[in-house]
Length: 322
Ligand SMILES: Nc1ncnc2c1ncn2[C@@H]1O[C@H](COP(=O)(O)OP(=O)(O)OP(=O)(O)O)[C@@H](O)[C@H]1O
Ligand SMILES: [Mg+2]
Image (cartoon, rainbow, N blue to C red; front, side, top):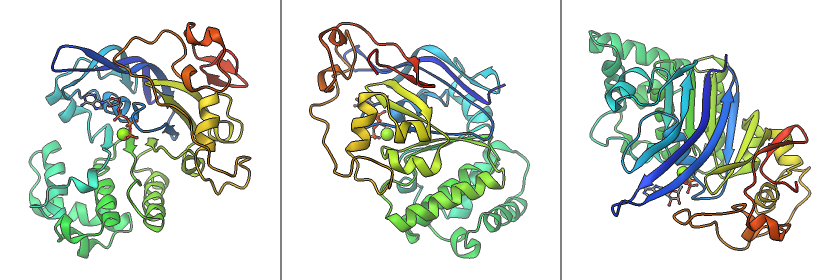
């Protein structure tokens, strides 16, 4: 049985004027134990919206329209926020939100932030027991435990804060981790340390499956087993990392790859190219292919005919002409 399944999920933002902006439209995927799924796509394509919806916690103005999310075969939709916080988040699904390391409570030491998290899920533990457990975990994951636990977040570098966020998020050994751009805004050597830490946790089986979001496709080459490419709220391609990076079939995936200056020796495109135009306004109904107005290969019919995901060359592609 898949450890995590998303089934035809539709999510929208409710505006103050009562309009619905459909930010995620019909996304489906499932994940097996031990798998890392990368999600890539340019800014605003809906990556964070999708994974926020994947936690079952809907913070206004985000709302689910339809679809299902299942953890170990059990739906986590239509639950109260309190139920999700107590029974799903941190214990089954750990979320490392975008920019979390800049949002740590500045008035609490790292050890208290971590202890609060444990105490909110496991009642009856005294602080000494919790701190002992914390020290053991921070030692195990290669943190400079003494230095880090007794500091306030503001006293630590961005990279160390991010490693603390990851360490704290995974304290309850959730099977599934969702990391939303965990390395963005960090310098290259710190990015490597953070990625190294994530894989150390995977190796030690502290968690077993992960969704890893970035807008950098080449980074996913080193991180992900499979990659989903998102455009305007939809998956446009879903295949193995190898397929998506080295032989993309959707014109948008190709353009996204070309738009990144990549050190990949096998990447054909050495010069960055820009993708002309802008993504569609999701507030307005879109008839045909969402990428058609920017697609160099678009035909007249692409503007009118909705494209469905179909199997092309052993991966899913949302383009009738791929
Ligand atoms: N609170 C909100 N209210 C209304 N619309 C929103 C809200 N948050 C995001 N959106 C819209 O939803 C769409 C998807 O945004 P989202 O943050 O999911 O994109 P993203 O792919 O994570 O981008 P980035 O790479 O910049 O993090 C965008 O058009 C964005 O403007
Ligand atoms: Mg985002």
